[in-house]
Length: 493
Image (tube, rainbow, N blue to C red; front, top):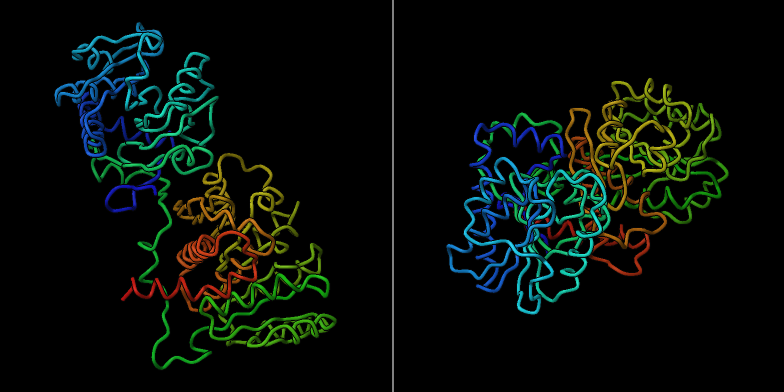
């Protein structure tokens, strides 16, 4: 299990923001000293004294390793130290730290690895942006295959701190000790899979410095939305708990909307209605029990359904065809000024028509829930990792964006995002996205704020996926929403 700082809500910084934070202090060497001391403290807290090899690079990460080595020596640890790279490139604070070190570095090939019981990886920190050298590859590969655990300074060497990509090779680390905040590379795949647990240490960066950092990105957890869940009151009834409308797909695509409808009701909507095309109504009538079905023959009848003033939230997209008729439906729905969720087909039908989408959702209460492919279809210009893409899309569209994937990002136009960590791998199954859209729609019908409803919905969906585990199908998820709700209710009370 991975661990974070004691608040469990550290910021997540990209490389640029990390450098800004580091440069905010006039005494960078003091930060290095603090970092080295925290590394040594964490090592002593997690491991008994043992023969330890500290592997340092020639940059700032190596400097942290030099300080940590001296701190451990002061505590009577048996330390060997190697430097990978050209020693003449060690400068500034790292050189100061090396000059204070009371142990002589050795060559890696001269170390008796059979004696080593712990490795400290202080090779590369945030600055790595190209593939590691053959020499470094060999060293990381050797220690990765060794039985002794590895502790990484800041981030496992070989992981790109901005993308999570592996730049040639990265060893699996038992513990990562990082400073001030998490970094993108800690939480994005495949970097996220390269360590067992992580500790965020404060080395002297002020709270005011961090408050100035933008974008504001955090881990999605109950800290943010638990108090905003709309639990039923004693005098509630089905309409007071919220009314969700799900726009059904055509006759050959009804499954997605049915999944969404059941999920909306399970997540908290007091009443759920499916708007069905006339030729598909029988399928919905037969297969749905506690949900209402209203059918329509034409756009006039469709508008009559969506104009019901009791409706709080509307979902369109699951099973929706990508054509102009669908765009007309979306335009009509947006004129109702309800809370709207656009999913799947309701996003893809704006392929090459981004200007239309921007125009019709302007100043509306909208959440869009694309996966990477759907986002790419309407916004092919967006680049970067999933966090960057979600933030850019949210800013450009001026709506809440839930960018679905192994790591799901919930982004707001005010440059804030919550990241739902990877782990619910069993959700990679057809229909689970329709379930998520339905859950968010149900929470919006409870009048939960859009950003928080989206974040809670993603978390709820993910937790159920992890709870159900192997062989789950989308149909299993709505049936088990109550289990996670019961656990949350105990926390809330």
